[in-house]
Image (cartoon, rainbow, N blue to C red; front, side, top):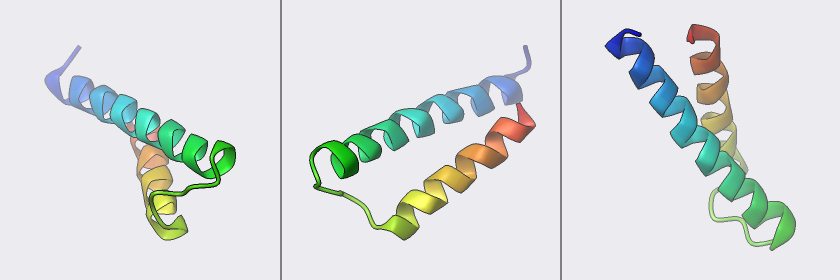
Length: 53
């Protein structure tokens, strides 16, 4: 696997963990740590990276 592909996969994994954490803070604890706009930006970046992988 190429280095670029590995970088994309690592970034996808990092973003996925962040999104899961923020979902839990928002939905389970009713205590969001980031704004909706910041969350949307993370999710958009994740979608773009998944299309590249």
